[in-house]
Picture (cartoon, one colour):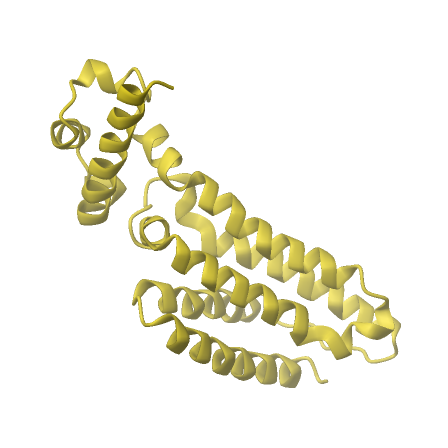
Length: 205
């Protein structure tokens, strides 16, 4: 990519971030983005075919990386021998959530877009996507407990969904409010202790 093309793309990205952060994806105007970037509409379409594709370019990599951290932690935990899983329940997930928090802070603008401005895009359901992954992992863990002779009562699916999505929304609040990272890390540790104790109680462990 030539220097001029690269500079133009950077202007488009900066203009798009400003517009999306102010108005959200649905309210953002492609005409305004083009004007702010100092390019013509025709020139814009030489880079992206739509507003949706532009938004994807801004946050897609961060979204996939973030979800990847979460999925890898679930896989690492599931790969442990069954008898080791109860003692390691909080360790892998705790390290993962801290890694995710720090990554979000390193890409704060992109995560503000994902968490506050993505209605109307495929990214708007991030909490639900993570909740679905977490729900499956919870059920798999309950099967492990049963195999170990420590059966866990099944949780009403509606309550389970409320608790899991609530947990992720609480986590996202740390990012949305842009509190200092060291404070967010401390709050995360306290939140994890709170939710872990609650889940252990509900699961009869």
